[in-house]
Length: 139
Image (cartoon, rainbow, N blue to C red; front, top):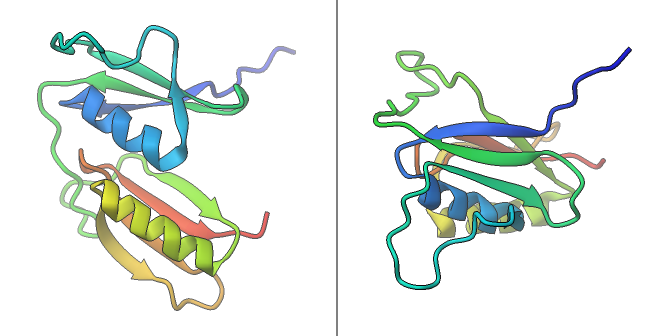
């Protein structure tokens, strides 16, 4: 039996380049060849961008332009998440560093559960409002 594999997760956004740059820097990803930002000063009009892990292995992220995107109101359910990314770091020190990096890049902190002894975590919204988590996982 041939089983599909997850190649990438696609995020809708009014501004694909801005969101792609946020995640490129946060997760140290690389643009798919041809999707790099223009270097000649021209206007970036791409409506679809793809990022891949530097190793070439693993799941990528893609960004698809939409005209309007209501921001999730999580934890309030008025506008649900629809999807969120779960990401992990190996320990609490790395979690603090990842939090600072996410905020520096433009994330908004939505929830702080750093002091949870079973699963310390932070929940953020990316610049387009998509929620994502960073938590401690030893694996």
